[in-house]
Amino acid sequence: MKYKKIAILGYGTEGKSVHRFLKKSSKFKGGKITILDKKRDRDYLKHIPEFDLVFRSPGIRYEQPIIRRAIKNGVEFSSAVKLFFDEFKGIIIGVTGSKGKGTTATFIYHILKACDEDVYLAGNIGKSPLDILPKLKKTSVVILELSSFQLQDLHKSPRIAVVLDVFPEHLDYHKNFQEYIEAKKNIAVHQKRRDTIFYFRDNKLLKKIARFGKGKKISIPGKTLGLRKNAAMAATITSYLGCDPEKTFVTIRRFRGMKHRLETVGKIGNILFYNDSASTNPHTAAMAIFTLSRKPGSTILIAGGKDKGLNYAPLRRAIKESKHVDCVILFGENKRKIRKTLSSVTKIKYAKNLRAATSEAYDTAKKIGKSSPIVKIILSPGAASFDMFRDYKERGEKFRVFVKKLK
Image 1 (tube, rainbow, N blue to C red):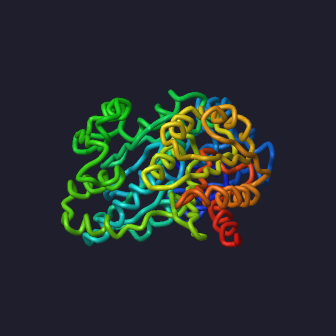
Image 2 (image 1 turned 45 degrees about the horizontal axis):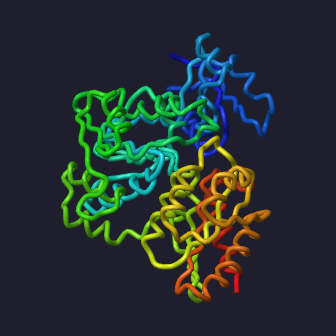
Image 3 (image 1 turned 180 degrees about the vertical axis):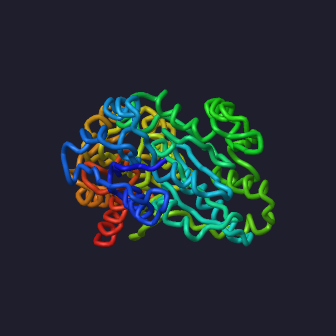
């Protein structure tokens, strides 16, 4: 089918990669390409019904009335990820979950690389899969980190699917948790019998998602051979693919972690600074608190940002059970909401922005440090960054700069 009028809906990383692909593709030759983006036109969504084919960027909500009406009236929708699934004939390993998908995907990539596979890493991790398409062969393996936004209208499932812990997330985008789950299940629902899905067996929801597909089900416990969950999952998958176990464990031991995920960014005397800016929901912030509570010393948490309609009870529970969080410094749009949940279990302070929060945390840590051998300051916002920053990466980099300026 030849498309006469093509729209790219949203012109970020994926939108631009789609544009580059379309201009080179003979399949779409002759079609007029139009960019629909809010930076160019506030009423950009109203033009959707005018096109034959629309490539939706992940940040554009799929379940909007205007999009649903357009689909009903015959407008075809696609995306960078959907296009990649149509074009690439090799093995795709799709990784999704509410937490850990970037780290797990990276683990798998490094292990397969060590085992001399022709392997690539793309997707929600920051690289559009369309940009690597010209390099790929039929024997290539591509690991895709897949968000709920990318999965929502996916019409194919990866040969190997990986589902990590799933809990309420992005409820500012999805109308409810059920819609979020409906998006996640697409990683499995189109699998054939030759395909495989991996998941953690201690999570009933993951088992339910796995059952939607026809692929082989492989479940593992949360921890295997003393490894962290992400590493355990990566080791299981790469072993299944025939990787040398020794190379797998050497790679895992050498892995230094990813930026903005419980990353150590500074030390002043007995005060340690951790950047966990990739924490964008209360569950991930809670996990950061539990992780740090295994190490000696007191903890000061810096949290807050743009609200996503989430409940902060998991963070309150983590703080209460850890018994080592002396203070929480709150900044950002949802600081008052978080305070209502946490004020009964720890001391709360407000700051007008991240710079002020970092400074306040340091001043507080110096006082606590007089009676505690180690004080840990962690930026684990438990919220999105868009009220003050471009993304969680910019927020994490700013925190790193603010820490370096402390004396």
